[in-house]
Image (cartoon, rainbow, N blue to C red):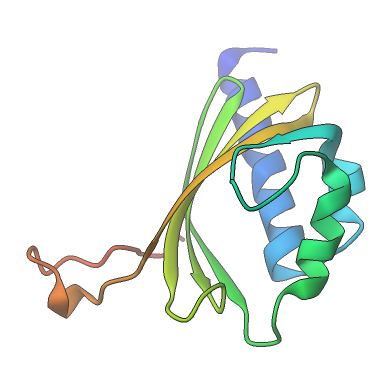
Length: 131
């Protein structure tokens, strides 16, 4: 598989996983798309894909996820997104995934509260949907 094809396949896998977990709230997605020994670097979650169905089930009715840009390079894929209902204020995040053997194997994230564009020094929004 060429580097370009690998990047494309890994990007598609992460988009499917994020969509099924956060948009469709599909509790079967972790068993299908994440390694059983999924390694988690977010300090709030344990390792393994068995943790994820509980996370999905615990999402509030008002939870909403919007995906922004997605960048893939080799076995790493980064997703910029907006989480509404994750905390008291909308959160902007970057999730980083490592892919191994066609499944999500490892995850890091960085989250911060969204600041409205009108309140930023630059006047620029922290998040924009990418179509």
